[in-house]
Length: 260
Image 1 (spheres, rainbow, N blue to C red):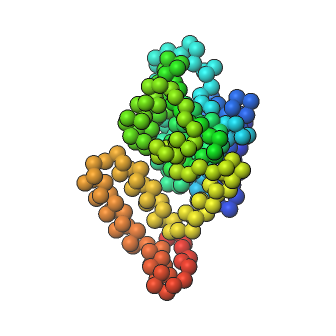
Image 2 (cartoon, rainbow, N blue to C red):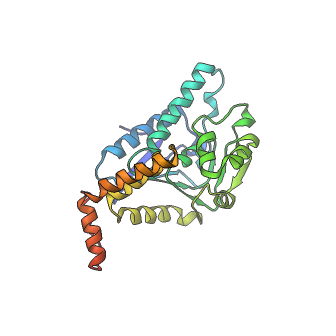
Image 3 (cartoon, helix red, strand yellow):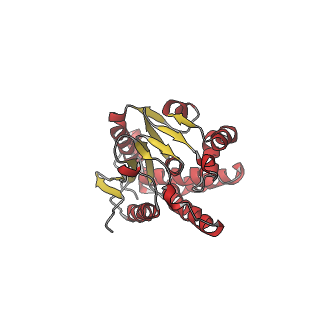
């Protein structure tokens, strides 16, 4: 597929997906969402891709939000379909089997904040800003903002941000647990790549199962989530990588994982 609104580069097992609408501050429109869906379908199906990074073109914006030009004239049915489609794309990112890191290089507002929250780990440039300002337009978050934000930072802080539409700086986002690390703008992408490389050096099945157990377990009660963890611990114990990893540790040498 040829992309008009995103860039997809694959290097050393890492897919870098760049939202590339700089004149619109990388705002999400329907075409961009469709391209994101296609890109992550390809990423999930490509055995040479081990993880992915999402970032934005330029230094001003990661994703400044949804393209507001889409909203005038939207009715209830159209609005629900719009939200469900966006949720489907972001669910594909969150619930896929490969690590996805958000390298938030500027404004991450509305759909931009929601996209970052669908990623498994979030690194922010020191100029980044986050928010769910939809109430200022008379609407609410539709791509999962009311749900993922509450799960990441707690209901109280999520309500504060969603009800006021306030925009917060990267350091405050880090303080409340919305982002994992804050870096200077010039270092951001390299730091995201370093993190991916570190994860890629571990057991592939183990990292896949960690993602699965955390993502699915968050939706379960603790008892069922612990059983899910135990089941996957059992499965991974039967892999060649478990034998290699434990033997390498005992023999004081680096492990050579095969993904089997």
